[in-house]
Length: 216
Image 1 (spheres, rainbow, N blue to C red):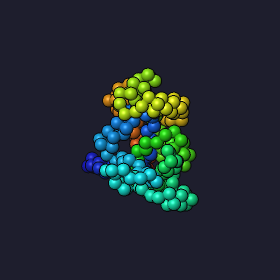
Image 2 (tube, rainbow, N blue to C red):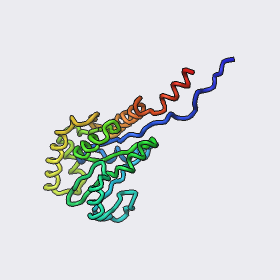
Image 3 (cartoon, rainbow, N blue to C red):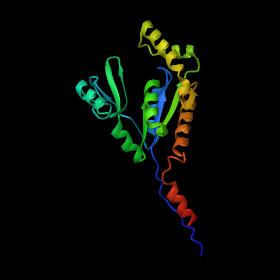
């Protein structure tokens, strides 16, 4: 009698990944990131360490790990960050131990960082990193989106546009580039990238044992 029972009903063990979303301000990155976090199981936002003051409504350990400058400097000296940077007078860093433990357990992490932080992460964690860059459909549409917010002055918008052109010049440092002409379609493309990368043979650490059982 042939045994027709499944070899395993459990999902295969998998190493997590570091899913980076980068884009110029106004390209829709935050909307897509929030949708991924809400709709996709097994992925969480990487929680950075920062020296900036806590804002109303923020929670230590959920939004950021808030520390003073002395503590942050000590963490830098002890090489406790995968990457860190100083932005507008405040320091931000990605804690190494937390990420490495999560990846080993199959946890995926979402990163909202610029191209410099992306480079640092890739140099340290190359095979665990998936880099996605979002582009606006046109530079005029990007400016329109920024102005439609109604929150920034002309001077701030001009500075954001200069920054956007600079960031766009680094598009070729990413594994995937997606044009956000329609937020729904862009999200589906980003989700497809995540799903495909999760199925990478190198990340499916349970495949060796599973295929051995199939052959025996």
